[in-house]
Image (cartoon, rainbow, N blue to C red; front, side, top):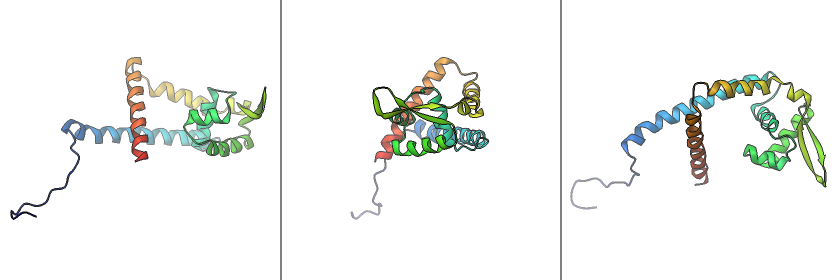
Length: 161
């Protein structure tokens, strides 16, 4: 230490003033949206005896019936063993059925049952998608999608550190 009375300094990353002031508000708003969506989703799913995770499997599969477990797991961004447990439970509940695939006896295609097609969770998700983006232009939705994709990418990078 030098003879002066100055304290040793620690190196801190510098953040520009606009970023430092905008980030907490934006992050808080994003967390608020996620919490409100989860609360509404949980309530709608709970009416059917589903968890949010299982309801999410149903709603994602609705757009890709005939997919394999591996394809659905990739679309959901979860590990195949995690999805297998969800599918097993949904099959027991009568929401999903597995069917053999032509040409490969080992692979099974996933399909929603009539019970799943008629479930209020599917109608709920369609309604939420419409209402959530009401009053937002297609251009703003596209910009939001790009920003959220970048945030998701950054989140993965943070988690890998």
